[in-house]
Image (cartoon, rainbow, N blue to C red):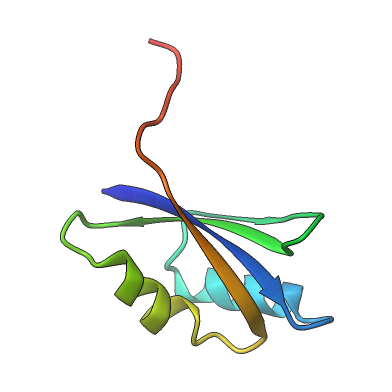
Length: 81
């Protein structure tokens, strides 16, 4: 599985509705509300054969209340050995 993150800017007053819709769709691993330029940070996992761009466009950005997204693709996870 390949992890990636998406930051979300939501329409005013819609961040909880967007977070709940993502949770109900069962497409995300973790969903966080954040302060700053973005309202939500969401971690996704997809198969190595899945096109991340298509996944975001077809499964994520279609959720009502999303104003903008910023996708972050990661390369290596670091942690204790």
